[in-house]
Image (tube, rainbow, N blue to C red; front, top):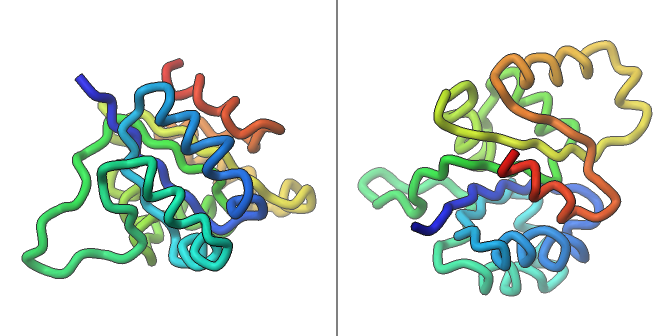
Length: 165
C-alpha cells in the first residue's frame, strides 16, 4: 500500500533552492506518494525560480495552489499524514486560528484535530517572532489538536522521521 503524504508549503526563504532536494525528493525516495499543495505565494516563488516543474516531476498527482471549481473531482486522495513545511509565521498563525484563506490552509484546516490524521508543522520564522505575545498561544493551539510543531532543522529532510514517530 502506498503512503500518501500531504506536503503543504508556504512562502519561506529557501523554498526555491531547498524544497525539492532537501524535502520533497527525500520524501518521495522514502516511499511517500506526494499530494502537494502550495500557498499562492509559494507557487509564484517556485515558478519564478524554475523549480515548480521539478517539484511536479516528483508526484503523479497535480500540484495545487488554487481551489477546484464546483463539479470538478478532488485531485488528491485523503492523506493520513501531513507535513506543512516550511510554514511561515503568518501561515502558522492562520492555521492555529482556523483561518483558511487559501487552498493550502483549507486542506490543513479541514483535518486539524482529526484523530486519524498525523500532522507535523516545520515552521521557519524570524527569532523576534518568539517574543510576540501571540506566538506561544499559536503553538499551544496546534499542540492541543495533536499537531507537532518544530522549527525547521538545518537539513530539511530531518523532519521526515517525525512523520513515522
